[in-house]
Length: 460
Ligand code: C2O
Ligand code: CU
Ligand code: CU
Image (cartoon, rainbow, N blue to C red; front, side, top):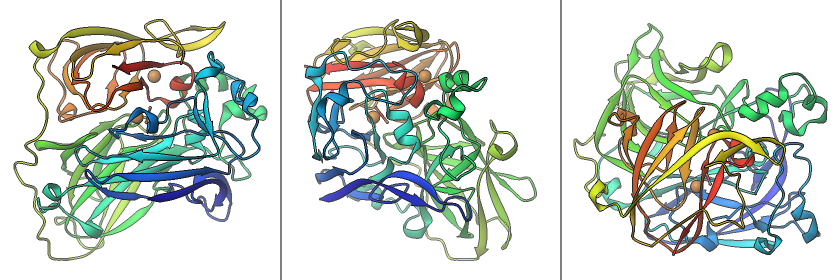
């Protein structure tokens, strides 16, 4: 049982300046929670922020009542119900709440997570309708790791050699505050700001676990890096490069929803917002005192650097990467699918303004979009105009194809977020099992999500 107070706090993220944040429990990221598979966890959230919030455990197999539906609010004390129906301050992308009856509000809320699922790295973050992007940007994000005995017994690097890495870009104003252009009246009217907001907000400072471009000391040994792209909109293609320009292998052992069947070796790994990779990097061949830089091949200038490791000492290493990692990876055949659905993720108009739409429609909590039966297997065909990382709540899925071709090497394993590249058509397959209730699927470019690119997924 965890008790988390959502409150304002400030942190020294950049040297000698205080940055005001919205936090889970006073820190950014919030506290990292470690759980065991099948052992339920309750988080009691108390909201002392000046506005309503919603908590979602990304990647969790969670009953709908605790899944953080965008109108299922935790209210701060003294907040008037009526105010939640209009929201305020977004300045763009507001589409209001069409059905006030859908709004559930509480002052504190217990979220209960059964965690009856494959062990993996989960992410808890805000999910309030229309305001998810600025809330995550200001700090409402934390990690939750689920483990089990089978994974512990594999002999993977562990303890100090297992590092969760939450990568997120941010922009800072001159006074040290986080600059979120669409909410800042002094920035909002500047040329290009609106377009940048529509595309998704980017920062020029790369934070890893809340620190800018950190340098981490490591042994000359194998490490397990559990990477989450917690950025609102930035895509990365990560590589590990030594001082003498050598690329270290990124040995992928897991995806969004846990271990792969067998490791896959990459020279570089693309990671879209909300995707996770579980990766082994071996520092044993790096000279003592040498550095390994984690670079973003899609970045330029300061956003090319992500972080660095400094190899500090020789050390024994009894870790291993088993050739078989897991046996329980679901495989669904096309022939099992009871239906095929098509969804287009495209720009459009939303109440006279720019919107991001699924199947031509912006999110409406009162509309029913997808209804499926518990246990049904379905194939979904997703097409995109620009880059959209699409996320399904509740279920993991496998990638079947990309524009008629086989999935890419990094599509291996069980995913909950798929990076749709511009112009691409991707097929995924899943079984809708777990719980009945109302869930969501959406683009995880957080600005696109707030501008309508979300839909209801009802499991009956
Ligand atoms: Cu990261 Cu709807 O979630
Ligand atoms: Cu989610
Ligand atoms: Cu998108």
